[in-house]
Image (tube, rainbow, N blue to C red; front, side, top):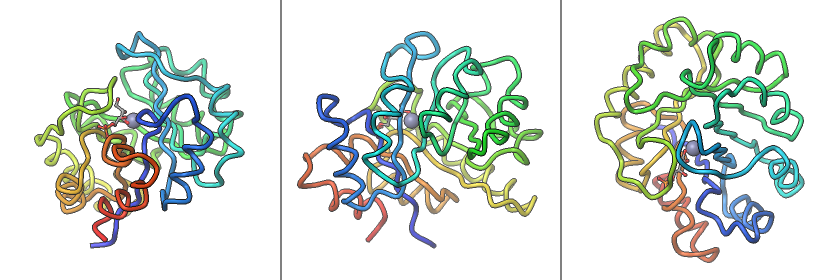
Length: 219
Ligand code: DX5
Ligand code: ZN
């Protein structure tokens, strides 16, 4: 089983020194930098917008994995692309035309992602998968870090990985929420190629980042 890519979520970082935190996880071996964007409407929490993504951009050359939990989402796709997002991930429930949103993200030269909430079935991808570079399977309900992994999502990870293999696509299955070394292993066994982790990476402060990222990778 190849080692998963690790995308630490800066939602669990020290917001008073985000630039420093992004540099620290980059140096500690992060593959991607996961940025959780929340609007207090699509999810019950508020975080950051494109200006912060732009300010963080010079602090790492690694791909910015930008998870948009905002509705309506379409109005902001260009702004996040301009700010330096590499992956732009949207929820099907966050706009009226998810197919068009994915087409638009690709037309901006960015990798297009679809995020499935725990209650959203894999079937949602039937007519979207060919336009999707990353499927983000939510293993918690979006909105907050530090929640418990919902084990029923393992079946969805498997179903999505099977759909991708059947179609011969190179879409990556990424899993977000409640990832620790144990659930990480379960997700990889189910077919995940990338894992988001907030708490499990940041919990011990900067001295623990490299060790915690390695533990998620299964090193
Ligand atoms: C939840 C976010 C996650 C979250 C993960 O809405 O999408 O990225 O930060 O945090 P942990 O790893 O603490 O569950
Ligand atoms: Zn996320």
